[in-house]
Image 1 (cartoon, rainbow, N blue to C red):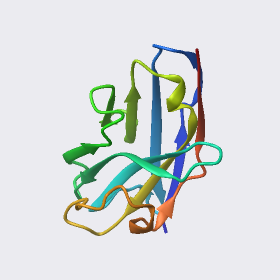
Image 2 (image 1 turned 90 degrees about the horizontal axis):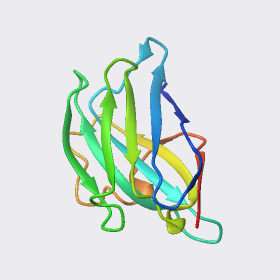
Image 3 (image 1 turned 180 degrees about the vertical axis):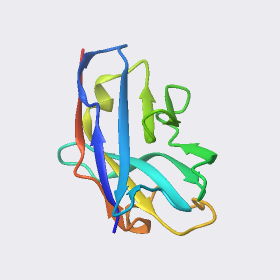
Image 4 (image 1 turned 90 degrees about the vertical axis):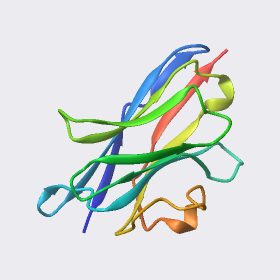
Length: 135
């Protein structure tokens, strides 16, 4: 069984940057398998929404990142090879980016698919990390 552990949240001012990390830890160490990895966020009183997703193959290679229109050009999903974690680099942060950010995973899959933004498509979730952007 794989557990997801997020880190890197915090408080910044408008225009600032943060990097979130997600480690997929299984019984045999860090393992992403052949999966779709995604970042979601949920602000108080709002539904959980997809932010970005990327396909990770069984050799930890990344394919076909996708982004919600509200973060495209500001957020980048990638991988920290040294730490073997999935990352979300968030630049030019805005107050409306304030939310709890969650890492999610589903696999084995050959791609993230057209409904990558749907929380119901994922079967493994982290506990979240808080991001607060002040004006």
